Length: 189
DNA sequence: GCTGCGATTATC
DNA sequence: ATAATCGCAGCG
Image 1 (tube, chains in turn red, cyan, purple):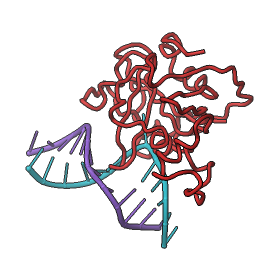
Image 2: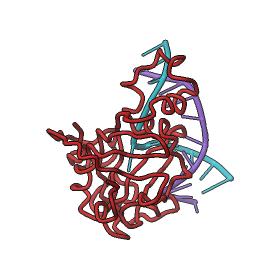
Image 3: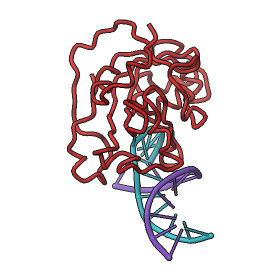
Image 4: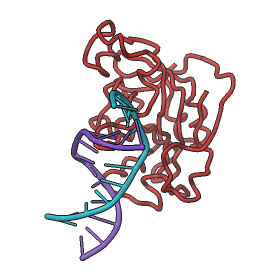
């Protein structure tokens, strides 16, 4: 079942936890969400849109929940967020890790430019277990910034997979965020 | 215009 | 532990 708008326009921390175990569909590739981090601009110094910082880059973060915020990091990688809550809220959830569900071969080609056999030195375990890796594996780039998750190319599915135990902890690589470094908004299983 | 740096990754 | 690599935000 495809998730509709009402799934995304809720409290960000609830959406973040509910995202775990859901299936992300991108063209013909499917992956299951394993690790996420929430970012809430109104109170979160780690968020790009902290303090209503509305720039060309962060504009999408202020869209209504159910859109995708993609930005480039370190000049080399893209990170993908799912925008949550109401319009002008400025919050979202970063996808930090997923696991392959369908069309793993295409993911290998996207990641390494070669077939899975030839890329045998690389392990499936490392295929998409990071924010920059998963966008590469799914071929998600700047062109997807602002895209709706209610469309055809990119959307989420609930296949009734049950996550037994959700783990939580502090977010990764946000040392600059002062008190927000201690917010336990990273969820995984 | 300039500058410093980042919600990362692969490799040493 | 460190290089790779460039768009963005802040400043002026």
